Image 1: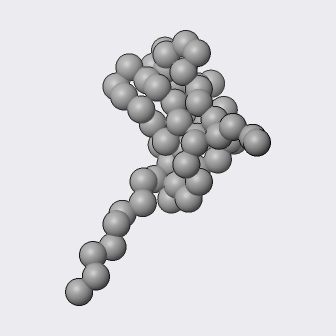
Image 2 (image 1 turned 135 degrees about the vertical axis):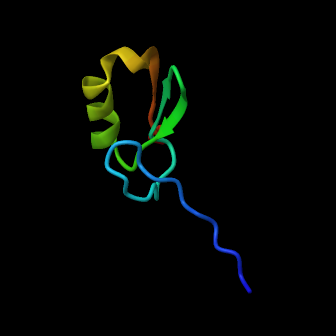
Length: 61
């Protein structure tokens, strides 16, 4: 029987996180997001819970 790993879910919309690199540090730990849109909206809705200069996005080559 194969064991399937659970994919992390987006902290904002609940979709599976398919692409790594959209992370945000908060007072309670690191959150992962499915896309840049969710990553950018989360701090607007939760201003007092995010740490300054903590948005980490996937770097372009």
